[in-house]
Structure formats: structure tokens, C-alpha cells
Length: 332
Ligand code: NCD
Image 1 (cartoon, rainbow, N blue to C red):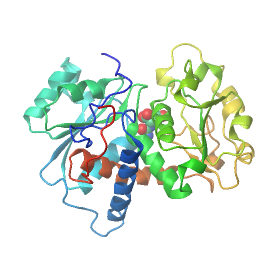
Image 2 (tube, protein in one colour; image 1 turned 180 degrees about the vertical axis):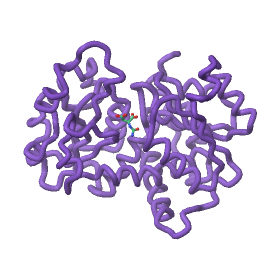
Image 3 (spheres, rainbow, N blue to C red; image 1 turned 90 degrees about the vertical axis):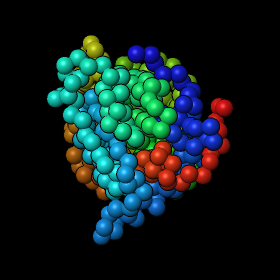
Image 4 (tube, rainbow, N blue to C red; image 1 turned 30 degrees about the horizontal axis):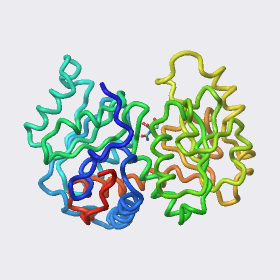
């Protein structure tokens, strides 16, 4: 599979509206803000007695998950159902993929059943872009995480959470801590924070868990957690992605926690009103102490709730029934 090009406007139609949602790259600040504004209006729907709006009635959305997921798959399903779409969850473990069917054949067969949208998670970087290049013109593709490349809906729900709790991005110092090397979440968060004008984006990790030339992403690099946490407004913790590690990148989990685990003591180095985020799944006492994960600064469960409203916004905008105002075309 070919790695996606770094800048790609496959995501926008000729009028500059969202068609696919594959990565934060290629989307401008206005569009990211519009996603968050649209999500604000959907957040209210989840609080109503009848948690549904008819925007995607008659549309069929296929959740195509080739990798494990709890939060992402279920919040996409809830988002689609709250928009009144029909949702199909394909269980890859018992699908024809297990009999050797190619990715494209699976997609073509689902298209023949009149699917309007694919939400794709795949272990290969570039899988969602690949599908987007091959679907019929009316079909949209949403990237729910591809390899270590991108996880743009997670980045947007995290930006939504930050904006709700902290307001303007230009006053914020944000630390992304942990396994940056293997994290698609980190890549998408860094792009989004920079596009939205965050005052400072830090990455904090041991050398073995930092990608080569990470500075070129527009971040300040810290190899010491205490220094990296000093005076930050937001901490985004990452899971150690053991399933993507080849070879011994870490001495031991215990040693990792000793040097890079977020404890109450270390949290005290950040601003007094710091918020602590984590995309989940959390490995307690490996990357974060339970007292911090469950403590007053943690917004980890709010992130999950916000995932529904943000995904409703992205699904409806890609189907062009949400805020369909034409945006400015980027990289036209
Ligand atoms: C992340 C993912 O799958 O990339 N989780 C998620 O979507 N909530 C992060 C992770 O697996 O650590």
C-alpha cells in the first residue's frame, strides 16, 4: 500500500466542502473551527430526551474496522444512529477478509449494497486514502485510524474538549507525552493544534519513542518529563503502543513509569488548572497513575462523550447535510 501524500485535497470537493475526512493535513483553520461549531449544536441533541435528528435518514453507513476498537467504533455507531442513518458493523474477524478477500473487493461489494459512507480503521497507514481513491463519487470515507499515520476524528474531539474547557488556543501550552513514534493520535493532534494556533506544542518522550526529525512537525522536544510539564495548560497522555513496537525500545514498563509516568507529584509542575487527557485505552500505572486518571484534572471521560457530537458533525458535513457552507479551497 502506498503511503499517503502529506498534503492531499482529496478530502474536499470542487466547492471546497468536506467530502472525505482522512487527515488534518490539507484542512484549514476555518474548516476545523466549523467542525467544532457544528459539534456544539449536536452536543445538545445528546442531552435531549429523544437523542435523534433525521439528517441522515435513508443513508447507509458501514463501520469497517480491521483493528480493535471500543470507544471509536461505538461512538461512530452512536453518532450515525443519532443522525438516523442505517449502520452496518462489519466484523472483520468473521467476514470474507478472513477467507482472503482483498480490501477493495470488500469495499466494492458493500458499495453494491448502496453504502453511502465507510468509516475505516486499518492497521496499514494509507488504507483510508486508498479506499477514498476508489469509491463511487457519492460515497464518503472517514478515517477512524490508519496505522501510525492519522486519527483525525480523535484529534477533533480532543480539540473540541480543549476549546470547551480552555477557550482560545493561542494562549495555550500543550504537552503530548509518551509513545509519539507509534501514535497516529499524536500526529493528528500536533497538526490540529498548530493549525488552530496553539501558543506552544511540546512532545515529551524518551529518545527511542520519538520519530526522526520530529521538530519539523512544529513542536518543542523534551526528553525529561518534569521539564516538559512545567507550566502547561493541557497534558495529552499516550498509550505505549506495544503492538506496533518491534525490538526493545524500552527497558521495562516499570522503568518507563518511573521516568515518564504521570503522577500527582509531577502534575503539580503544570498550571494549577491543567487538564489531563488520554485517548484511551489507558494502561493504568504504566503511563498514568490511577489517582491522576480518576482525579479532578482528568477529562478522559468527557473526551469520550464529546466523541459522539464531533463525529455527528463530521458525518453530516461529509454527507453535505450539516454545515454545508462552502469553505475556502486549500491547496487547489
Ligand atoms: C487510539 C487509537 O486507536 O489510535 N485510541 C482510540 O482511538 N481511542 C489510541 C490508542 O490505541 O492508544
